Image 1 (cartoon, rainbow, N blue to C red):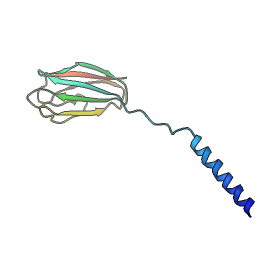
Image 2 (image 1 turned 90 degrees about the vertical axis):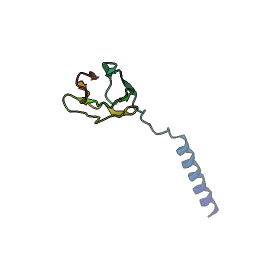
Image 3 (image 1 turned 45 degrees about the vertical axis):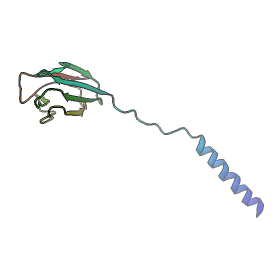
Image 4 (image 1 turned 180 degrees about the vertical axis):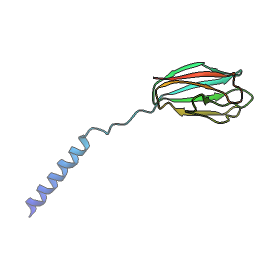
Length: 113
């Protein structure tokens, strides 16, 4: 009986040692972040190239609200107050022209590769 208890204890110890030696689980890296500044009634940069999965943030440094509204309606920030920001993850590849719905002469392009 004592030999059997020792054998079980030895097996449990080997199992625990094997569990500790297992490689850590893979973790996914966080998506990269890119920024567009809204200032002086324009988007800067006027054309931003990103990869799918990257987060894009628009920061409104103007004194008035603006929007980031894709011409094809694929994304729309709604109103971004002065001093506020809005972000989205670039999920689909393509060229996305966008403008401010309050100030249509403000326009830029997001290129997702």
